[in-house]
Image (cartoon, rainbow, N blue to C red; front, side, top):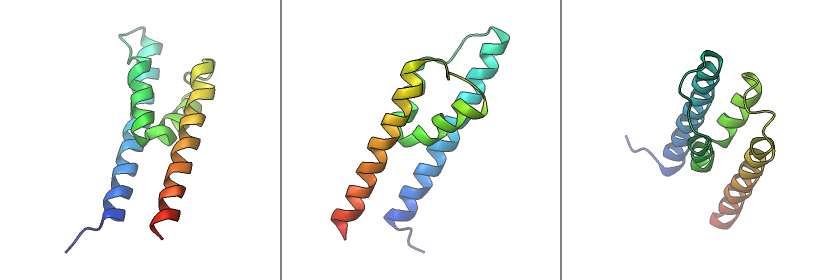
Length: 94
């Protein structure tokens, strides 16, 4: 059985978004407990690695980082840029 590039790409996107969502859950839990937190840099790194949908979903599901302007604006901007890049790639390969 041969695994194609689109299948690998979809698998990567699913895995990184699930991980990003989980990281938001862990950071929110730590915030409630007053424990050591996951850095904002790490959260943005997950978003930049195509986990922006997971971070964005986690923001609103867990009500976490929704008062921070750099997250409220930055994460959707990253997501929009990534969606444009994916659409451009799809357009150019066909």
